[in-house]
Length: 115
Length: 114
Image (cartoon, rainbow over all chains, first blue to last red):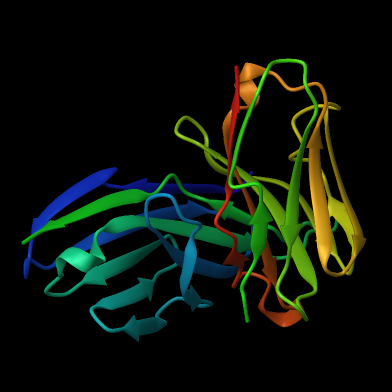
């Protein structure tokens, strides 16, 4: 069974204080790892897709990296508007049994950036 | 594009009543997903469709839950009869064929069953 564990559960930063969020995963053949951002009262918003170990993606103050066991979301000099819950999800390669290729989400890291 | 549209945004109902949630995916998207989000269990996939056909409904918790997609621009999730433990936020999402993991979520329906 695919598993995704995110840490920490919650993180409070001062504006400008860089940090990283962790996503550890167990999956039978990784097809893709995805990062989403969710603001209170809204649906998740897609951020990045990573396909193979060593890959990196960047968007403004965010950079996502991937290894064979985990992914990191690095936040450089965060601003209050970066406050949100960040979700990680994995997609397994198609299996012979089910062919299921849906996403499995982690429980998220709730980030608060104070001015 | 208007994005994924869900209705209603909020639903309060009594135990035993039928509840119907509605979703309009983004035009041109091949996949439609129904998720449920709670504090305890996080975001869970209930069912997903490809070209209006249900592909995997193994996440549907019980026979009380059913979902349909009669055409490419409309889907429903029905709960009959509803129970207090069904209280959650229900999200609909859609994606393109070759970018299945890049899903676009609607604003959700907050369901409260009393």
